[in-house]
Image (tube, rainbow, N blue to C red; front, side, top):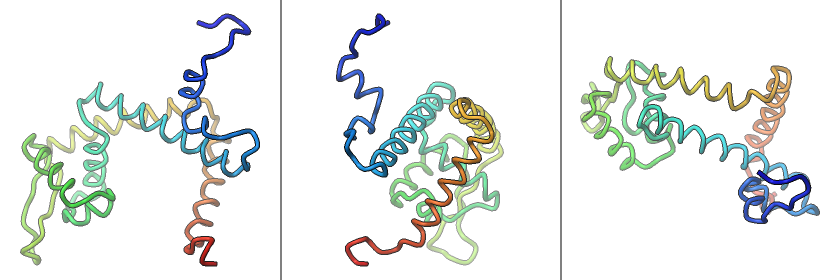
Length: 176
């Protein structure tokens, strides 16, 4: 522990700040905001990854994959999974192979498209995911615990406004 008034090592301070260490005091407020948002997201994601690995022996990619299937009990085509997860078909195939080998998903041929496969959670996969999802929700609540309900609602609303703006800003600034 540092004594009062003792200077922090530059590397330790940069690690604590994360992406925010890139910003200078004179940088525009929106750049500093972007770096703060990125720092928060990275810090939360890193902690969730650590906890998923420690508590369940799974990766965030596996958790996200199973979350998509949990939302669609009838299953998803592998191409839909790839699109929803924003990963390549090869990544989805690898995850599917691993999860199928573990008895957590079932791959079946599509009823009308012979080239496609439908993937569903098995009962074992659903139970496994439900346990992870309960823990995940508690972790998120804990990580955001420093904000009361009003602040969470305020931040959610502000980020919603930003998101709406971004959705309507379909052209890069150079093209406008």
